[in-house]
Image (cartoon, rainbow, N blue to C red; front, side, top):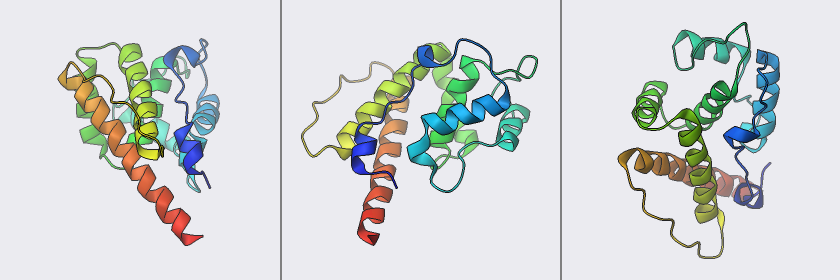
Amino acid sequence: MPTREDFLNFHCPRYEEFPAVELYAEQVLSLIKDYLAIFSGDTPLLTSNMINNYVKQKIVKPPVNKRYDRVHLSYFVVVCLLKGFMNISELCEGLEFILARHTVKEAYNIFCEELEYAFKRAFSDKPVPEAEAPESDELVIIRAMCTSLASLTLVHCMIDEMKQ
Protein backbone atom coordinates (compact mmCIF):
# COMPACT_ATOMS: atom_id res chain seq x y z
CA MET A 1 0.00 0.00 0.00
CA PRO A 2 1.53 3.35 -1.00
CA THR A 3 2.24 5.86 1.73
CA ARG A 4 1.79 9.60 1.80
CA GLU A 5 5.53 9.87 1.29
CA ASP A 6 5.25 7.82 -1.90
CA PHE A 7 2.74 10.28 -3.34
CA LEU A 8 4.70 13.26 -2.09
CA ASN A 9 7.74 11.98 -3.99
CA PHE A 10 5.88 10.74 -7.07
CA HIS A 11 7.65 11.47 -10.34
CA CYS A 12 5.55 11.54 -13.47
CA PRO A 13 7.81 10.58 -16.38
CA ARG A 14 8.30 13.42 -18.81
CA TYR A 15 7.78 13.05 -22.55
CA GLU A 16 11.56 12.94 -23.10
CA GLU A 17 11.90 10.10 -20.58
CA PHE A 18 9.72 7.79 -22.65
CA PRO A 19 11.61 5.39 -24.90
CA ALA A 20 12.51 6.96 -28.23
CA VAL A 21 11.75 3.68 -29.98
CA GLU A 22 8.26 2.48 -30.78
CA LEU A 23 6.87 -0.25 -28.54
CA TYR A 24 4.51 -3.19 -28.84
CA ALA A 25 1.41 -3.31 -26.63
CA GLU A 26 2.96 -5.65 -24.07
CA GLN A 27 5.91 -3.29 -23.65
CA VAL A 28 3.50 -0.36 -23.24
CA LEU A 29 1.60 -2.27 -20.55
CA SER A 30 4.82 -3.00 -18.68
CA LEU A 31 5.99 0.61 -18.81
CA ILE A 32 2.66 2.06 -17.71
CA LYS A 33 2.52 -0.46 -14.87
CA ASP A 34 5.99 0.65 -13.72
CA TYR A 35 5.35 4.38 -14.15
CA LEU A 36 2.03 4.32 -12.30
CA ALA A 37 2.65 1.51 -9.82
CA ILE A 38 1.54 3.53 -6.78
CA PHE A 39 -1.89 4.09 -8.35
CA SER A 40 -2.71 0.57 -9.50
CA GLY A 41 -3.76 -1.29 -6.35
CA ASP A 42 -5.25 -4.68 -7.20
CA THR A 43 -6.60 -3.69 -10.60
CA PRO A 44 -4.37 -2.93 -13.57
CA LEU A 45 -4.72 0.62 -14.84
CA LEU A 46 -4.22 -0.48 -18.43
CA THR A 47 -4.85 -3.77 -20.22
CA SER A 48 -4.58 -4.93 -23.83
CA ASN A 49 -8.36 -4.68 -24.13
CA MET A 50 -8.29 -1.10 -22.84
CA ILE A 51 -5.62 -0.17 -25.37
CA ASN A 52 -7.73 -1.66 -28.16
CA ASN A 53 -10.85 0.15 -26.91
CA TYR A 54 -9.04 3.49 -26.64
CA VAL A 55 -7.93 3.10 -30.25
CA LYS A 56 -11.43 2.05 -31.41
CA GLN A 57 -13.01 4.98 -29.55
CA LYS A 58 -10.41 7.30 -31.12
CA ILE A 59 -9.09 8.38 -27.74
CA VAL A 60 -5.62 7.59 -29.08
CA LYS A 61 -4.52 7.34 -32.67
CA PRO A 62 -4.03 3.83 -34.09
CA PRO A 63 -0.57 2.32 -33.70
CA VAL A 64 1.70 2.17 -36.73
CA ASN A 65 2.64 -1.44 -37.51
CA LYS A 66 1.29 -2.45 -34.07
CA ARG A 67 3.76 -0.12 -32.38
CA TYR A 68 3.12 2.75 -30.00
CA ASP A 69 5.18 5.91 -29.63
CA ARG A 70 5.69 8.68 -27.07
CA VAL A 71 2.41 10.35 -28.03
CA HIS A 72 0.54 7.13 -27.22
CA LEU A 73 2.38 6.78 -23.91
CA SER A 74 1.47 10.37 -22.99
CA TYR A 75 -2.21 9.69 -23.64
CA PHE A 76 -2.12 6.38 -21.75
CA VAL A 77 -0.56 7.98 -18.65
CA VAL A 78 -3.09 10.82 -18.58
CA VAL A 79 -6.11 8.62 -19.29
CA CYS A 80 -5.06 6.00 -16.73
CA LEU A 81 -4.67 8.64 -14.04
CA LEU A 82 -7.79 10.67 -14.75
CA LYS A 83 -10.34 8.04 -15.76
CA GLY A 84 -11.04 7.27 -12.09
CA PHE A 85 -12.89 10.53 -11.57
CA MET A 86 -13.70 11.77 -15.07
CA ASN A 87 -15.72 9.98 -17.68
CA ILE A 88 -13.88 9.30 -20.91
CA SER A 89 -15.96 11.71 -23.04
CA GLU A 90 -15.27 14.62 -20.63
CA LEU A 91 -11.61 13.70 -20.56
CA CYS A 92 -11.44 13.62 -24.36
CA GLU A 93 -13.17 17.01 -24.64
CA GLY A 94 -10.70 18.50 -22.18
CA LEU A 95 -7.74 17.00 -24.01
CA GLU A 96 -9.07 18.20 -27.36
CA PHE A 97 -9.38 21.76 -26.02
CA ILE A 98 -5.86 21.67 -24.55
CA LEU A 99 -4.30 20.12 -27.66
CA ALA A 100 -5.85 22.76 -29.91
CA ARG A 101 -3.38 25.19 -28.34
CA HIS A 102 -0.41 23.03 -27.30
CA THR A 103 1.55 20.13 -28.72
CA VAL A 104 1.17 16.77 -27.00
CA LYS A 105 4.72 17.11 -25.68
CA GLU A 106 4.08 20.58 -24.21
CA ALA A 107 0.70 19.70 -22.71
CA TYR A 108 1.92 16.39 -21.30
CA ASN A 109 4.99 17.92 -19.65
CA ILE A 110 2.83 20.69 -18.16
CA PHE A 111 0.48 17.98 -16.86
CA CYS A 112 3.43 16.18 -15.22
CA GLU A 113 4.69 19.35 -13.54
CA GLU A 114 1.23 20.30 -12.32
CA LEU A 115 0.56 16.78 -11.07
CA GLU A 116 3.75 16.65 -9.02
CA TYR A 117 3.04 20.11 -7.64
CA ALA A 118 -0.55 19.10 -6.78
CA PHE A 119 0.73 16.08 -4.85
CA LYS A 120 3.20 18.25 -2.96
CA ARG A 121 0.39 20.67 -2.01
CA ALA A 122 -1.96 17.84 -0.99
CA PHE A 123 0.49 15.58 0.85
CA SER A 124 3.07 17.92 2.39
CA ASP A 125 2.99 18.77 6.08
CA LYS A 126 4.85 21.97 5.27
CA PRO A 127 3.45 24.96 3.39
CA VAL A 128 4.08 24.73 -0.34
CA PRO A 129 4.59 28.04 -2.13
CA GLU A 130 1.88 28.98 -4.58
CA ALA A 131 2.57 28.19 -8.19
CA GLU A 132 2.38 30.90 -10.78
CA ALA A 133 -1.16 31.53 -11.95
CA PRO A 134 -1.94 29.70 -15.17
CA GLU A 135 -1.99 32.11 -18.07
CA SER A 136 -4.63 30.33 -20.14
CA ASP A 137 -7.89 28.42 -19.79
CA GLU A 138 -6.29 25.18 -20.93
CA LEU A 139 -3.66 25.45 -18.20
CA VAL A 140 -6.40 26.11 -15.65
CA ILE A 141 -8.04 22.86 -16.83
CA ILE A 142 -4.77 20.92 -16.45
CA ARG A 143 -4.21 22.33 -12.96
CA ALA A 144 -7.78 21.54 -11.91
CA MET A 145 -7.49 17.97 -13.20
CA CYS A 146 -4.25 17.46 -11.29
CA THR A 147 -5.57 19.07 -8.12
CA SER A 148 -8.66 16.85 -8.27
CA LEU A 149 -6.54 13.73 -8.68
CA ALA A 150 -4.24 14.71 -5.82
CA SER A 151 -7.16 15.51 -3.51
CA LEU A 152 -8.98 12.28 -4.30
CA THR A 153 -5.77 10.31 -3.82
CA LEU A 154 -5.25 11.96 -0.42
CA VAL A 155 -8.77 10.95 0.62
CA HIS A 156 -8.12 7.32 -0.37
CA CYS A 157 -4.76 7.33 1.39
CA MET A 158 -6.26 8.72 4.61
CA ILE A 159 -9.07 6.17 4.58
CA ASP A 160 -6.53 3.37 4.09
CA GLU A 161 -4.49 4.72 7.01
CA MET A 162 -7.58 4.77 9.26
CA LYS A 163 -8.28 1.12 8.46
CA GLN A 164 -4.91 0.08 9.86
